[in-house]
Image (cartoon, rainbow, N blue to C red; front, side, top):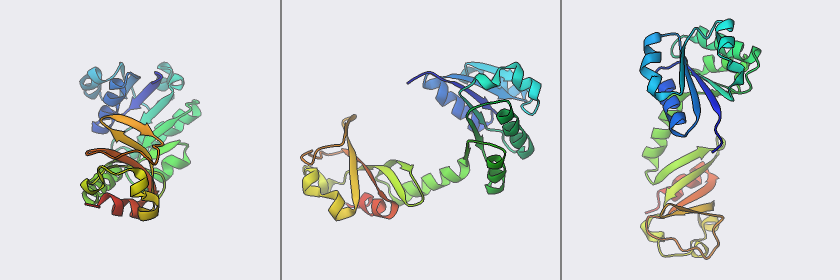
Length: 218
């Protein structure tokens, strides 16, 4: 993975967790917060740390904010500070600004002031938990649209020992297998003769309702 520069503004639970994951992946991460105690607590989870007010243009300029590949605005409950920070970042020429929204109204304003990507952590986590409860065999998924997903699904015992040709997922379940994960090896665009073994996972693309039905086969 190519190393890139990330700045995380707001070192609450979400911001700190995000920064730690990026650092773990070998990325350069600057953690920024107006609260000195939070910055001190997050120092082990970032490459660099700064105590500053992100609603102050000169403060942002002083750390060369426009040089970061991504700036994530993860400010907690202060909507005004969050919105003003996004506005300043875009005015200063930051290419990619990702902003955490507290609700739909906040998200719409963030979008209007220039955020490149608005995320809703609480809503998204709730949807992910619900999805996992409804389809326990789904190990991971990517939402492509309101109708279509890509999902990593644990193969049910009734399908083991059979080839993709025999299973004929497209005709029987209206989903397409785009990869097979077998013993941590990923087989991209598997052939129709690929045999499915116990504990293999299929990465499938399809309509969400069809994927739910497929994931709940015993």
